[in-house]
Amino acid sequence: MTTGQARSRNETLDDSQAWDIAVLGGAGHVGLPLSIAMASRGASVLIFDHDEAAVKLVNRGDMPFREAGADAALAQVLESGRLRATTDPAAAGAAETLIVVIGTPVDEHLNPDPNAIPRVLSSISQYLRSEQLLILRSTIYPGVTRLVERTLVDLNLELDVAFCPERIAEGHAMTELFSLPQLVGARSERAAKRAGDVFRLLTDRIIEVDPEEAELAKLFTNNWRYLKFAVANQFYMIANDHGLDYERIRLVLAQDYPRAQDLPGAGFAAGPCLLKDTMQLAAFNDNNYFLGHSAMLINEGLPLYLVQQLETMHPLAEMTVGILGMAFKAQSDDIRSSLSYKLKRILGFRARRVLCTDPFVTTDPELVSLEQTLEESDLLIIGAPHEQYRRLQPATPVADVWGLLGRGVRV
Ligand SMILES: NC(=O)c1ccc[n+]([C@@H]2O[C@H](COP(=O)([O-])OP(=O)(O)OC[C@H]3O[C@@H](n4cnc5c(N)ncnc54)[C@H](O)[C@@H]3O)[C@@H](O)[C@H]2O)c1
Image (cartoon, rainbow, N blue to C red; front, side, top):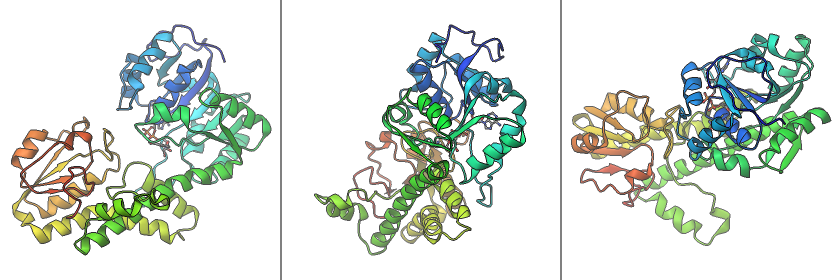
C-alpha cells in the first residue's frame, strides 16, 4: 500500500494519480465509513459515486448522513490526502483494488435484481484492468459473485474476484469495521490472499470461505435478525391482545436465564436491509420460505396492528396523532424503508390529522417541530426510539411499543 500524498479536493480526477483502493458507491452508508476507515489505516482511497451532491459534501469534509465518529475521521483523512471522492467513472481503474458497494434494493414487487452489479461493471468495463482485485461488498443475491466472474470473462478481463460482505450496523460502522471479523469469499487462493490483505488494514480476523458460503452467510445473518424481531413482535401482539405487557414478561423470562437473553423487545423492524435481504433469500429459494414471509407479515403488519388497537380505545377519526421519530431506527437520520412512514400513511386514512417530527431527519419538508407535535397532538405514537424522547412526560396518551418512556408497552 502506498500512503496518499496531499491531494486537491475538487471532483474531477487527475488520472496520473494511483490509488490503493477505489470504492464504487463510496459516498453511501456503507461505502463512506469503509473508505474513511481504510484511509485512516494508511490506504489511499478514491471514492467513486454518481451522487454529485454527496461527492461534494465528502470532499468538503461534511458527512452526507449521520454516522457516529465519522465526522472527525473524515476530516483527518481528507487532511492527510488519503481520501478523495469523484463522480468520474475512470476512478474504477485508478486503483489496485476496486470495492463495489452500491445499493442492491429489491423492486416494487420485492424481486431482487441479480444483474444490477454485473450491469454496472459492464458499463465501466473500459476502465477495468486485468491485474485489479475486485471486491464485492454489497449484499448480493446468491450467485452474483459467479455471475460477475462470468461477466468479466465475457469482457475479456481477468480480475481477481472476492465477495467480502459488509456486516456493520448503520450508526456503529466506525467501531464495528475494526472489531468484526471479516468473511472473505474467494474461489482462488490469490484472490483470497489479496482480499485478506486489504481487510487486514481493519482487522487481523480474516475468515476464508467459498463465495457461495459468504453470500448465504450474509443473507442468513440479516434474516436471523429479522426473524428474531418478528418473534418479538408476534409475542408482543399475543401479550397485548390478552391485556398483558410484553416487556414486563420479556424482562422476567430473561432474568438470569442465559438461553433467553437474545429475545428482542418489540418495535418497528425496518430499514434498507432486513426486509430486503429476507426477500432476497425467499427469491433464492423459489419463494419457498414460509418463515421469512411470515416474518414480513408480522413486522410489516405492526403499524396497522397499533392503529387498529388505538382505534378501539380512541376516536381516532377526530384526533390529531403525532408520530415521534420518522427514521427507521434510534439515533439515525435514515428514513429508507422506515415503518414510521407506513404508520403515517395508515393514519392518513384513519385519523383527522397526522403530525410527524424527528430530531435527525433533514430530508422531509413535511416534518414539524417536536414542540408543535406535542402541543397539537391528541395522541402520540413513538415511531423511532430516539434517546431524546426518553425524558418526555406528555399529558396526552402515548403508544410506546418500545417501552421508551417507562410507562409500559401495552396499547
Ligand atoms: N446500510 C447498512 O446498514 C448496510 C449494512 C450492511 C450491508 N449493506 C449493503 O450494502 C449495500 C449498500 O448499501 P447502502 O446502505 O450503503 O446504500 P446507499 O444507497 O447508502 O449507498 C450506495 C451508494 O452507491 C451509489 N451508486 C449506486 N449506483 C451507482 C453507480 N452505478 N455508480 C456510482 N455510484 C453508484 C449511490 O449514489 C450511493 O451513494 C447494499 O447492498 C446493502 O444491502 C448495507
